[in-house]
Image (cartoon, rainbow, N blue to C red; front, side, top):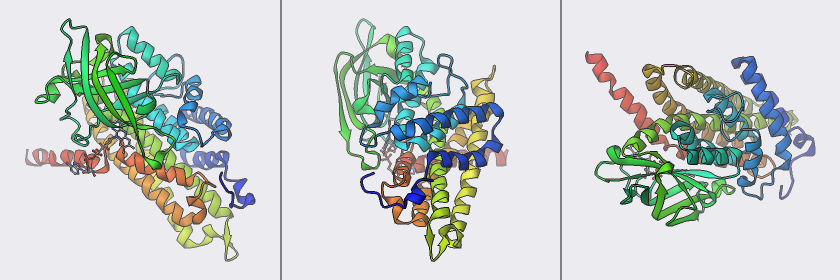
Length: 420
Ligand SMILES: Cc1cc2nc3c(=O)[nH]c(=O)nc-3n(C[C@H](O)[C@H](O)[C@H](O)COP(=O)(O)OP(=O)(O)OC[C@H]3O[C@@H](n4cnc5c(N)ncnc54)[C@H](O)[C@@H]3O)c2cc1C
């Protein structure tokens, strides 16, 4: 804290422990005993780590702490860390956002966006080694989809690749932007196409190591909202990728990209929910203790009603995220025969949920700052950092309009249903 102006009598109650008490009161009724135990384990970890976090340092120094507990991701089983699955991942993301929303953003990029493909498509010893290093938090990962001139229109990418004459390598020439973790990353889950005219049929997904032969440049972009996370302009010139690091060749990269978007978006819902719950809980604590005109400010309807509205919206969004995650676990991840119907529903609802939660977190943090007053824009509470991170979460994983475009496409298909 650069300069403290918050009243000590309030500050002593603005603790993560109290944040979790409020969250538990609201979400425990939606969880089973195993899930509640996992929340308690996460809360113990967060409460212990919170005072040790130095906000003057990048988030990456904390990755090994997450790795030790198997917290780089929880969708997939890694070593014997239990529980796992999408519901566990949502709970992990929610708690880590409360702990440190910027750490959570970087963790999601390394553990899920880069790590998940190693579980879904990684069969070689080389990829399993990458997986271990990412999960331990000893190495940092990122994903390279977006290009300078291909943002929302990610499929029609211009980054190209070719096979070496002896077939032992794929050679990338790629330019990517907004690569979260890029400047610090050891591994880049990156997409390129053999033929720009046929991206769907020729897209490749590869795990690129910074150590590979060729030129790999990562220049940091200045993004003040998340100043402890490094985000890159990434350039690959003639980078030679051994075939054992190819996750999806010759068009398989395209299906992998789209399959990956669903867990990514569900995961971002977890991060967004953490921002909502932490911000709301800090606001509830503060407005119950801060007095103006001789009263706790929560007693003024202008403040209390507004927080009530935000609680109703956050509870609804949480129920949706939990339901979508449970359906993903039951019908896809743990199902012997994954249900096509569920896959379709979840693909749609992951966009609906990502749209809803990331917009809610931005609206909520803004509104809370109006209700808490000046203190919430200083570094005396975590609210400003939560607010800044929420703006970024609306853009990553596909901007707001792209989620709406996907939802609109689904609505347009109803014409067939109506007319049949
Ligand atoms: C901080 C940050 C971190 C990121 N991290 C990563 C990362 O790690 N890896 C990665 O690959 N990418 C990452 N991204 C990129 C992110 O996914 C893109 O920013 C996003 O897909 C939008 O692309 P764009 O910014 O080029 O916007 P554009 O595609 O140029 O879109 C500009 C505007 O037009 C709208 N628009 C575009 N097409 C349509 C349409 N058909 N209908 C309606 N509206 C439309 C968009 O919604 C947007 O508002 C990150 C972005 C940011 C800001």
